[in-house]
Length: 207
Image (cartoon, rainbow, N blue to C red; front, side, top):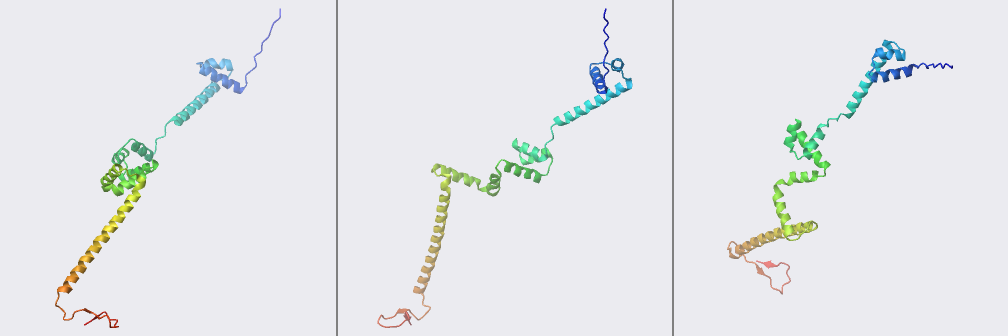
């Protein structure tokens, strides 16, 4: 009869710690773990506490990493403007000064390439009905955007011609009044007479 003797190789420090964690996760108590790893209750307790602490830290890091960072005030304003909110509404919702809300509004318009349209509206808001009327007339007469410059240039020429016309008309009326005054006036005893053609005199009139 042959007897077989089996010897268990003792675990090193790192293997013992690993085994302690495995048994701990498997629901074993410190009293149940001690005989298997041949360690004191105090050492086993320390290994378990260090492990639990490390797991809590890793969990907290993961939660912080997954938490959504609160957007800045400007980003919140952009979102509200994108939703169609007005400047006074954004001011109230974000509890910020109206000037700051208006600045965010301008920045938002720049981000969507609409700032020039906003500036145009600010400068020409009272003329917009007139512009719309002109736009309708252009459509009715099949005049396109590229022809607007020529239309405006022609209108400018017409305006200049009208001014010149009224200026000349006023001057003509003034000259007519002067002519009538001189023809009907007896203020002077002198009369202007043309010179005879056979005299070589450089004066055009004599008295």
